[in-house]
Image (cartoon, rainbow over all chains, first blue to last red; front, side, top):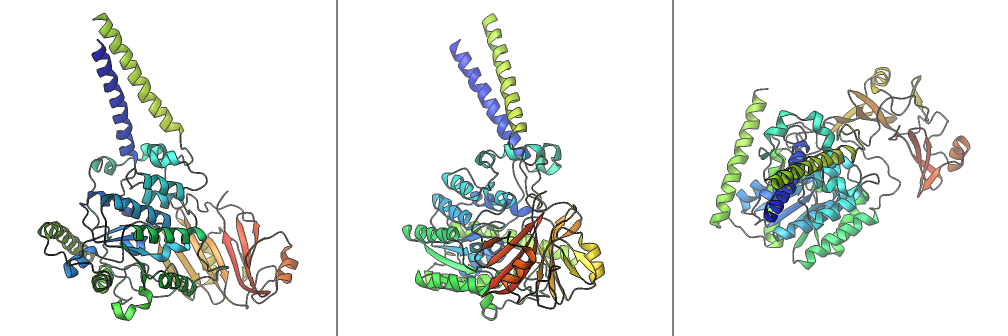
Length: 345
Length: 184
């Protein structure tokens, strides 16, 4: 009788746990329509590693660089672990977590996030943290990101946070319960539409232009993490005209890069070299690049990755080429679909 | 068989109780936001209320933080320049209207655009209490009193759901900004 009792107990416990995870999965936002950016972080786990370059940062990375262009033109396999308003500690812990899966040649960090020295908003935190797999890096990232009135448990068990979505469930919550539709290209969010820059907003005067200690601390941690793992760290600032990037901020990053022997590329200063045209290369009046802009930036970046960091051309690797062939096909299919949609408007 | 039946019954009860426990735990924990919504207004300002904070006066109208922008724009006429920024993570736009001497920044509250901030750009306009760019710190204190918060060169006066801030450099006001604050 004992084995029956034990078996039943295991069965009951399993059922309870399964129900719990079923409910959690059901009520969590799926981010497949509307705010699709919430799906970005989790797409990394579908990968098989083998990326020589990993980008981390906010929307200025996932909307400004094209991994497919880097592969097609330079044979550089890359992935963008970007998310909306990704804070620097979130980028750091994503880097730390990435090392559990693979060891890239170069990490590229977009420095706009240096402007934030403390957590900003739960809703933005969610777009990065909910997509991460449970790990010590995720727990540390949650701890660093939580607002004062938040609880760690709500991040670790999102059901506690999202339970009231029960009444808002839509067809998509069931449709994408197991698998979501593919939306991104190695973390790149494609947009082919064009909306030129018409005005250039000036930055408000600030009482203090110094980056905060917390932000500096995480930049230093990034540097150490890279040094300890024999990985190069590259700093970039995408050519987005808003939010405003102050000269005083730029100077601080330049000084840090110089004193730590890091390459820092401010693409706002490289408009001529990259060929960025704000009349044709942005889809939202200069906040982000469209596909044309992202491909131009990637074409500029490729030779630097090759020459300065020795990132090899991996197009001779048959297995990698097969993987990227599929990615490239999907890339051009989406491009064609978006162009057709635009033409029909 | 009786024993087995009894055991099955107990297991069934345990199972039902456990599921019920999870449901209750789920329903009553983390209820900070009962809507479950992660809208952009979570920790932003929300809703029109009587605004008692400091107002900015121009063209015969008083402009307060959290005000509905539509009537303000009607009265002010076409802005010298307009810029809009779509959030990376939420539907909706943050809009900036720049007039010759000040800029207005908006936030979305449902279908209504509300005033999030106002920045004075030159000394042709000032606050309703008579402070202009290039004035001194003493003049600010004379106008607003000494109940301010001070950090670096920033002097802020908080009133209701807004904050009026002055940047003072070498005893000269170099920035005047009204900002809407979150909260009821």
